[in-house]
Image 1 (cartoon, rainbow, N blue to C red):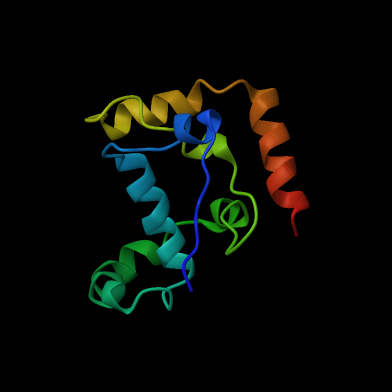
Image 2 (cartoon, one colour):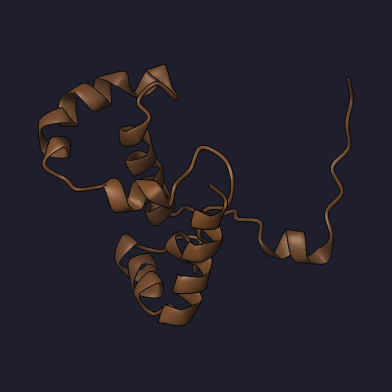
Length: 111
């Protein structure tokens, strides 16, 4: 069945066409909590199992539901096509704490 997607100007402004080390890191953390999501990650998961078991990722996993709102501040749009992880994580650290609180409340309220 064919379908159409309609985008407004504000939708297009949120599209991301850039490399994002922070997004890749977020997805790696998400994969650690849900290894069943993609079978092709199993070799990687086996390789990093020992290191991963020492990480306390539970607080992040709370903000990364299978469905619903993910806080925008933990993975903002890339700042450029070749941004580094350090640049992207600096942008996260620079988020106003009140904005982060409101974003987390919205995400946690979905459950």
